Length: 203
Image (cartoon, rainbow, N blue to C red; front, side):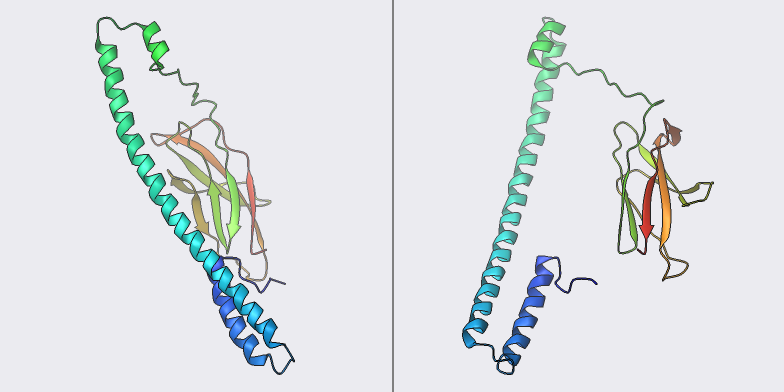
């Protein structure tokens, strides 16, 4: 049986205030002491304040992070300009570049062996498949029901996660689905198919 208490804080507060109003209404009928009613009201007030404080802190943190990202973006541009100026000078050598840390490392990416690593989950009937690009432009998504042989192409997705909603053939019967991804570069599939990710819809 599903728990009657909501998971999210906002939903929990709404539930709490409704519960308190009804609890206070029935308190006399169930011989509940006024002090117990008052204590519950105090705790709900504390919870409300705490949730508000968290929201305020999250908003402040988002502003601080945004400011940091903006400063870093400007600084990166400045540093790249200075590095380019050094590299264009006649006195520049690879040794100096190594000492300054302005020589990029060679990529170990191999399009013939790249293999996506998906993670799958189901929330409210919505299938969500997360993946990391790591050198590829995107992925082609394939699926099949457990026990089937052939894969069905579903979509090309350049941004994680891939999402789709599966409508059950019988609402009372869960369905077992398998997904796999193949990397894509410039509309061409590359590398190896991912390991199979299994999800159960309607469980």
